[in-house]
Amino acid sequence: MPELVCLTSICTLPATAAGVLARWQELCGPLAIQRLGLDARLPVGLQQEILRVAGRLGLDCVELHHPRLGPSGLPAARPASPDRTEQLEARRQLLGTLERAHRHGVQRVVVGPQALELSISRADLARRFALDLDLGPPLAQLGEDRQAQLPDALDGWCRQLDPVLERVGALGGTQLVLVAPAPWPHQFPGEEEARALCRVFAGAPIGIVHAIDWARLSTNLGGSPGALERVVAYRVADACGLRGMLPVGTGEIAWRELRIGPSQRVLTFRADSRREEIARAVDLLERLEAHRPSLL
Image 1: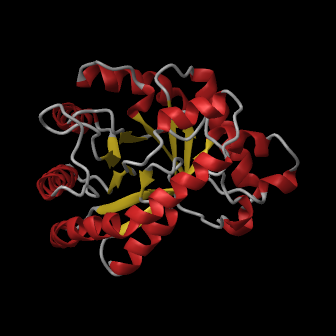
Image 2: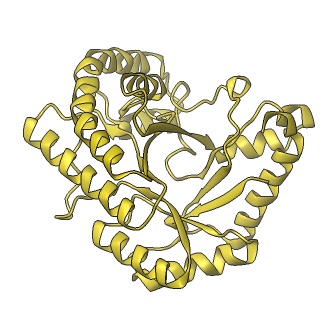
């Protein structure tokens, strides 16, 4: 069974560093989950304090998510922003996260997809989906909007990543990773763009982690052993951005195409998750590994 990691997304905020870690240990300790990951909800100061306290407690943090909020408490600057000032601030914030991870020996920094400003909002798309309205026209429109913005978005990310990855390489010991797929068309980069960025920066400390929708994973695991062979989970999410109310065309996983066997599985749960839900997740993943020995 590959090593399990559980994110602090399982902990309720606001909380102190000691409170976050106590809750994490209460839920994960009985399941022998030994590796810690800090989720993107945690502001910069709280991340720093958790890393300090975790080190004192002997907890191994292997993953740090770039915070959704910047140091001032406002939304983090977007690398893909068309505004030059915001691009420079995005670079400064990302460098800060990477250097924080390096100081505490964290293996990887995860950068989630950033929002694109498209003609139809994510909230409106979710509303249409909830009302069972025809999603064909809005998804087609969003696709056109996204394609029009992709060249500038890719260029913006490349301008950010060039100096950032140079700094990461100089520090050593930490990798920057992008999450794929992006579950909404409003998010960038998606899997194709993430792969393109990795090709551009081939040889640099950059990679991709795959996020698997927990609802779909559990459905597949509930089927026949043959269904298990079509699934590989890296990042198993329970409503942390990858489950529920996702319109057709924005979140499906190409199960048959997944052939990834990393040494770690990262569990992400909402703060209202119960211990028995986490235990079931671990059980399902153990079943998954038992049915896929040839691919790991």
